[in-house]
Image (cartoon, rainbow, N blue to C red; front, side):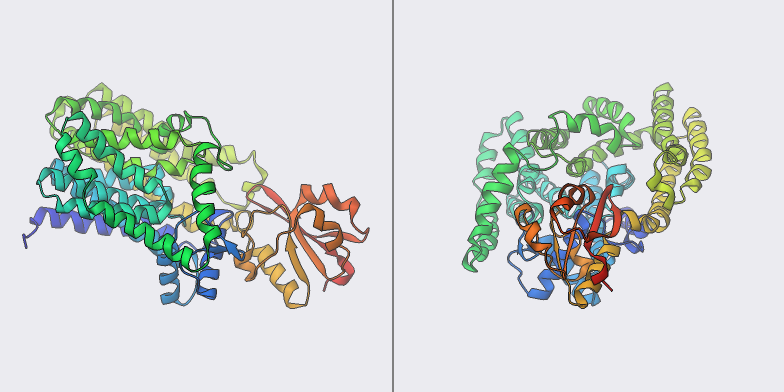
Length: 530
């Protein structure tokens, strides 16, 4: 086995250490599963482990076809090993996925450029705003992104070394990406190589790539999961997966509807604090003779286009296009460190503008938040005390064209934001983003013999902390249901106001909580409740 040069080992150890330090606040944050997605994922895990149904995920007793199972399998494994389903058990999976993304990004960029460029690419990815956010929440996007980066790195190896055995591994990783989140796991890694080979007119190589026998492995992986679901009697699940989740969301999404230019508008924000440097990085990259830069640009552009044509849009879907941007920015910053001529007025403009936009925004957050009553639970003033001087320091370093100091300051300041945000602010906001309080209340009512149901509530958001299934009622069932003095209903406050005149006059609001900007009420007969 070829030994890795010492300089590469040094960078790998640094990436491991920094990524542990950087994302530790999110991993160990004493916070709850937040409504809506995290709360539903926690419940999916509870039902998976409790009921032992592994091929098909269930939510509130019915199959959940929104997402494939591999992320839930990994979180379930971590939860079983730790003896309990917690945010921490799920964040272990997210953190390991994040470290994997950084290491593959380093290796990929180092092979395209050099070791220091690879390290800088990893550090830029590590400190990109969207990457920071996704690295510290309970979602499967980071896991899918890991498989996408890895797959494209394997394509590069296969093409560059002219060893098509890497294409086999490419299709295995693509299969894992699909099993992590769905069709995006195929489009993100598969389209860029096609564009790369087509632009270079490598038609013979394209045939070898597209018709490689590894594609059969990919189909076998997907088929094994779907076949297992079909054979275990979940035909409705397979039908829903193809017709509703794939075809339906592509044409007319029932969630996250946004215009086609949604991601173009979001890109500058999610790529802070590095977006302003991207234009010059691309300009200088194009001047060099780098054939594989085309692969990075195809990855970035094709990724944005593919998610833009889908009707359902969410800012997190941009995560898989962050690595190629980082792999263009890393070598650019390496040049800035080596070439004084590049540290000109443009660098001053780029660094100052990004400092003011990002750290100035952090510093202003406590002042802006005063206008919103729900933010009173979180102490945001330390952000102003820290980021006002950080903003000033960033402006000074940018104006003085101190590249190394600016990089260190920016990465460290973003770590401070994550440290305070996830260890202090996140737990303080639990009462307004977590379903724990209502869930425990419902559990207590159920233990005392009450029947609890929901109406007009997103499926599964209260179940995990209630530790039980909660039947969902249709509008036509409410009047009869509320006749029984032992029945409790959870619904939105506005829905209660709409139906309360149709119910017995002694039905009242037992408790009311605001969760994720929506008021939910527990309703029933007060004299019948403990």
